[in-house]
Length: 228
Image (tube, rainbow, N blue to C red):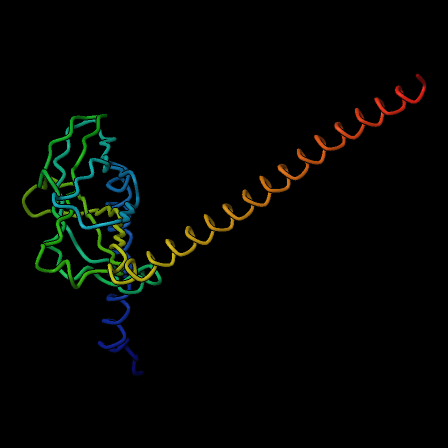
């Protein structure tokens, strides 16, 4: 009698599938607690520039909260948004060095929070080519976990999306400004014409009333004299 054994290839595939399933479950179990240890607010920052400022723009708006029972070491960095997640109408920031986050890292006590400053600086040499632009970048924050030797350290990164709208081109402003003066001039002329007509009609009406009064008096006097 011949006994048919399971071939090595089938056995390897079966064991490999089981290992993959077990590793996936381990990763999920390890990551679940880590996701709730720090939170971020706000999820996005919108910067609308009317002009390029002479000084860097500083926003003290990113709050990181430590929900853990122990202090947390949180680090920051600037990164690009994933290409498939970038907002419609926006493009990547030309240079990530235009955005800086301070401090680079912060120790946040247990059940407490800390603030990170986001500074935006567009170099003067690039400003003339940066009108009418819509850029997106991301401020990234993550907790540095202390791991035992031989263990795997999983990082949970949180991101605050940054949307930057640069000023409108000066040429467009210069073209629209004369149109505004023309509208104001026409409005003033029309107002002056209406005022002139009103004063003229009021003057005519006033003279008419004076004449009517004179005629009434004369007519009354004339009747009085006839009775005598």
